[in-house]
Length: 210
Image (cartoon, rainbow, N blue to C red; front, top):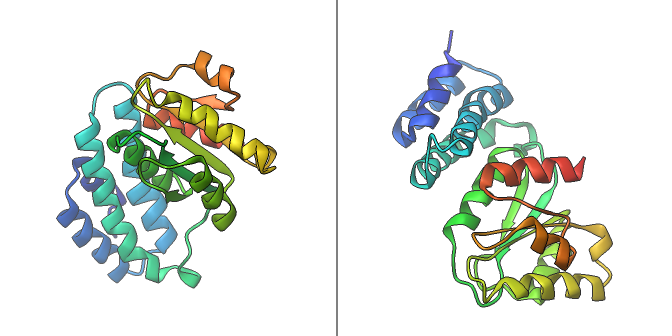
């Protein structure tokens, strides 16, 4: 009988090779693909998220775990009926115009994907118009804006204003995050919420969509 906890532990350790081998073993033993994903791969990533939240794990380790988990998910995807994982909603994420910082935003994107959301990552230096295009093209339910510089924070406000202008603001949830961002700033610019780290962002998106 395949031990799913060993797969979860390999994810926690960020060991991509071990995750690959164990995932293939689980597939060979005809385990339900969703069980492999939810109880093995995502189960491990949930532990990573909790540890990250209490500063027991740090960004480089979380990125390694997320990459290891994605190796497993790519192996399992073809086994799923129709090749589709459950999608809790589509999140359009990016670092706002004028800001090239990537790590925090990428970490949030990975953690959201690990939690069953479809994520469209627009990258860095993303204009308000590109966020609008992303929402329209992908039927986005959430817009997640990241900024690491105080000078680019106001691009968040501009993005929300443009979403308003084109009539999309009422159809999407807007969350913001990054080192200089506060709940007070989120309230000022009319965002729906603020998250201080990747684990909090996942909880916030789930809460706002429910």
